Image 1 (cartoon, rainbow, N blue to C red):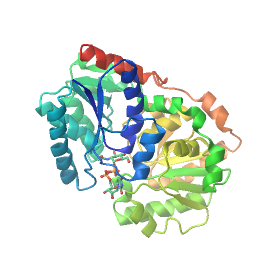
Image 2 (spheres, rainbow, N blue to C red):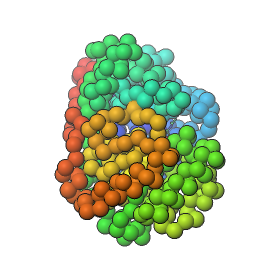
Image 3 (tube, rainbow, N blue to C red):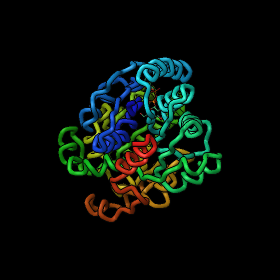
Image 4 (cartoon, rainbow, N blue to C red):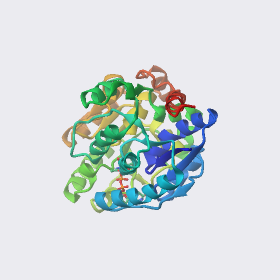
Length: 365
Ligand code: UD1
């Protein structure tokens, strides 16, 4: 029986690549089910190509919709796949709707579930991701945890200790494996970027879904562009609201299409600072040593604050905090930042092999 990976959204692809590779090396039989939650070439195909992911065995083409509609379509498609493939275990990643849908379907079919990136908690149930994480962990037979506090969160929720395994962070495996391909100079030349810039990414519903909030955010981003050039690759979610609020209608603002993985991290590596509401980027900036301001009231990744470069900021704090960072880092160079960065435990590039070992033992091979 195969190990079935369920992948749906952009961050899933980055996390799965090292796990699939390590299981391949262990001689496992595997299948990849792409749910089609992300379907734009720039959100999906580009990542499969660049990360050397195997062509999905099937793409369910689920696409977008309300949470209920999307989750229902995911579940219906996945039920059929799991029934016909009889997986030994289903591996799910992160906290997106594809993750909870796959976990729920597998549990009902009595198929074991392994969750990569288990145990993260923002304790903010207004975030769809927090709902997805909590429920996925409850349904998982194997919880693969990225940072130590996750083990405690799972224990507090009654997850038996023997299910939880601290394995480190596979997203960082991908980052470290591709380090040589992140060429800031090439990205600058290709996208016409200046030497010194702040890079922003914004896609959380709480920041971009309401037109008023998006407009307020755009005013702050313009304030940042008055301090340094602002480069912003726009996620399809929120694009309309941010553009309607005149995002690119200001000197020094460079609006880009979503970038592929190596171009994106190349741009991050050379940024004076990063402004984001993404989860993964808080981790990637920590490893690269790039100052990160996260525009959220909380984070499920506090280790990026205690060990890394991350700081939470409100809309009001954005411009003054960026000013401070720019002043403090005026003479820094990117290579030195990377050398001096502090690393959380087990964010060492070998999470994939550790995950593969746990999975192989679990399925009894
Ligand atoms: C999802 C995840 C989020 C993750 C993000 C990474 C959930 C609940 N959220 O959010 O945790 O940080 O992925 O990108 O699963 N769209 C496109 N093309 C695409 C994909 C989306 O145009 O390929 C547009 C559609 O208008 C869609 C909207 O983006 O309605 C939102 O997409 P959706 O998959 O619902 O969630 P994300 O916002 O991408």
